[in-house]
Image 1: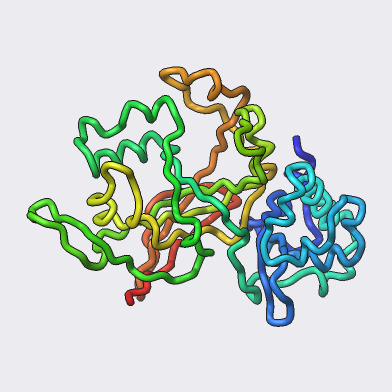
Image 2: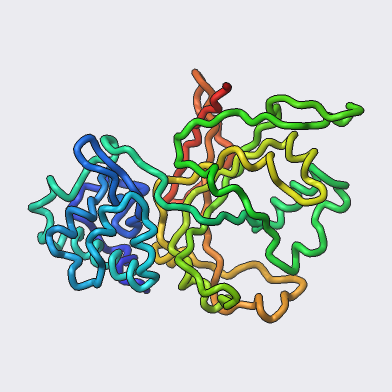
Length: 337
């Protein structure tokens, strides 16, 4: 077990019961306040740990980090230290903020900020973004929407990872408004397509994987190595203009129906923090080719909850969740311009 995940740990910081951010979580993000520039922070209860301030106390000096990475407005420089680097950092943060350690508690006015007084930013510079059909049920449902329901799940889905490259430049942090997309669509009873605003806007509750720097071009990452190249996970809402998507989908897949906006959560939960939730995966039938085979539990049991909240109305529950670390009240509004 990763020591920082021990459920017995408590923090000297007041963490409300059933908080999304107990000391066993410690997700990373980028924030600023009225008197602090954008920097690296870690969520703990209702607070944010200012890693730049902790670093100035010399408490990360033996971990091998250049302290400038903690003052960066993106996590990319920090992630260059790889799995072992970020694991040792999360372990040190866990140790410093336990109730048995008073090393930084006397500096709490400098190292802690309230989340309610902070502005969150897109946590990473995104160089590439690939969207996968990772769920058989999702791929089947989409196939029913766009193809013959009797041929909903295409044959290749059970054999290879099926995905497409999305538009990384349109990914924004949670809470940022966006324009309703314009595009071509063709109604079932129309003889020709028409141009106008999307009328079938859809949301997708997804999880994003944030990866470390990979290998050199042409070199392969095996399934046994995959965990070493995953920094963490975040909530992701791949907004979809279904009427535009349906018309453009064949033959090359999503394009303008998916290119206008995607929201990602401000906090990235490390893969290490999710280790206690690993479970056996479903049986692979038919068996995959040998290069896709894997050992041990590579699946993570995460239940998510979504609410849709229209102006002046109470939230409407879409699906149920018991997941203690991540909770999402999806109350973003479309900006009609």
